[in-house]
Length: 184
Ligand code: HEM
Image 1 (tube, rainbow, N blue to C red):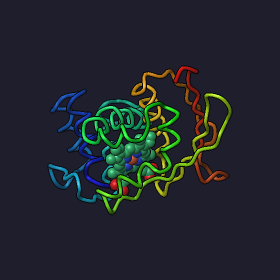
Image 2: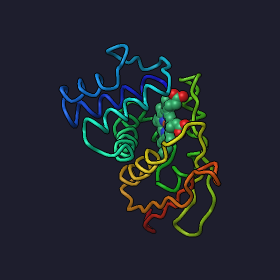
Image 3: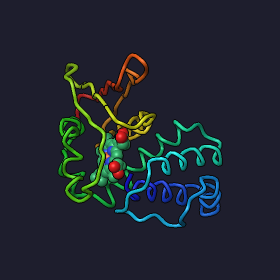
Image 4: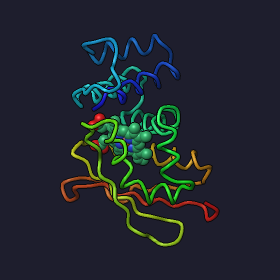
């Protein structure tokens, strides 16, 4: 993954838990270099090692670390570094979700080696939608949950997210039912 992802994990830890905690996590993850470069590619394994190390050092389950990171990515990294892209994707939560399947197409324009996940949507009735998430990577569904919760916050919209299909031996993808308040 691009270094921006690992850098965002570092920022989240430094902001919420302090520089000393970051040092412990970086050490536990056996990082080769002390700094991440945003637009350089790193093996996915580095990101997984960071999540694992953060989970051990902070004493939190890995799923909770991933969810917190997903939230941080949307509310901090997304808004601060890529504000115009986030804005262009929709003025309301349902609009943004409609556009999500095409979101990373625009990101590829400035990060050409991006290997994005694939999102698609299925109508589920009034004020709800099913989001289908497919990825060559394993185990990141909790991060998607965190991202979706954060989108609710970003649009000031009460949202309920249910992980309706879990990727396993029978299913090659995850599905989420997203329900929002009628005023969105
Ligand atoms: C401007 C905002 C965004 C940028 C710049 C961005 C960029 C990226 C980057 C760099 C990666 C790592 C993949 C790689 O380096 O090859 C990634 C992965 C991912 N992105 Fe985005 N993204 C953005 C917004 C979103 C949003 C809004 C969602 C969904 C709510 C999302 C969902 C994901 C997921 C789930 C992954 C993990 C990769 C996987 O599942 O295979 N991203 N994105």
